[in-house]
Amino acid sequence: MPKEIISTPEAPQSPMYSQAVKAGHTIYVAGTPGIDVMTGAFAGPTVKEQARQSLLNCQAILRAAGAVLSDAVMVHTLLMRPEDADDLAEVFDEFFPGVRPPRCVSKLGVDRPGLLVSIAMVAVTD
Image (cartoon, rainbow, N blue to C red):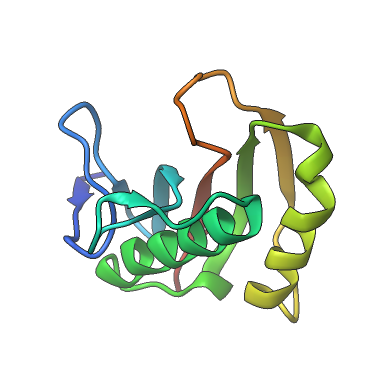
């Protein structure tokens, strides 16, 4: 099955990995931080601000692959502080108001100053 590298300037990019890879109808989105591409900075100092931006970034990556957030079938959230889980859940409710994809939350292992959350996901299109 051929693989397609997905890239968009509407989400943070890294020379170390692809934003996403599409294999058939499945899209694998890399861990995406809450960085505003217009400023190059974190969207704010709170997990809510960064999670919103991270999900907007994931949305842009999915759009570049021909998908939407409702196509997500699994979301993996990396969270710096476990005590931010409730705030994170509130943001997910904004972006996934209907059927919510399964998700897991792990502690973020990268110690990057200011980074509170990174979101990865898998989506499947018809």
